[in-house]
Amino acid sequence: MAPGANIGDRVAIFEAVHGSAPDIADKNIANPISLFLASALMLDHLNLGHRAKSLRDAIRDALQKRDRVTADLGGEGSTAEFTDAIPERL
Image (cartoon, rainbow, N blue to C red):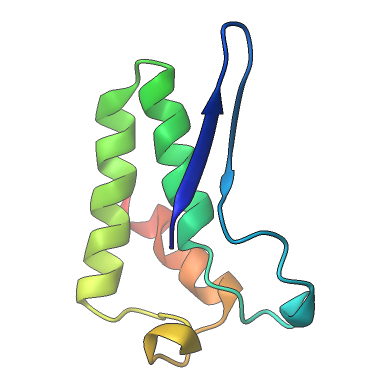
């Protein structure tokens, strides 16, 4: 669930640290949290910290309530299902 940021003088890239995970591609079982957290880092970088906080709060709430969490976290949710749980909280 680790996000990544590479920030230069003129360019910044935000991504999941874990890589592409080709072994689970197209199976709808990937945990999307690292991408959401990378998005929050991007929002911070763009001086939109209040939006980043809202996104992190939505992730935290979904995790605490175990709402559609993916199998790697002991749940039964799919990538799409957990992804849907986040904007519902925003």
